[in-house]
Image 1: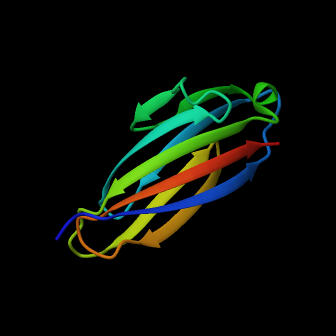
Image 2: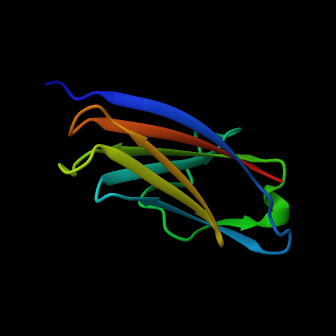
Length: 118
């Protein structure tokens, strides 16, 4: 059976503390494999980070206000016990959880997360 790619998009509105740095972490759950690509929507040729994203410093809150960050996370369903896809986006102490399912084991899933900084 050919591998299928399922896609979805979510939009998050995140209020920043203007004088505090914002750190981004992406967690792929359920013992699945995943990788992310992070960039600002107005400059998709300037990738900030690819691969595992853990405590990546996006900068001070006041420099992020009114910007949109794009986080594209691709997950390969490698856990034979479930087809559930779980992705968590952490911005400092705020956690945003996302869940979905693929149809078959070894299918792939791509979540595009658009983060608007307020």
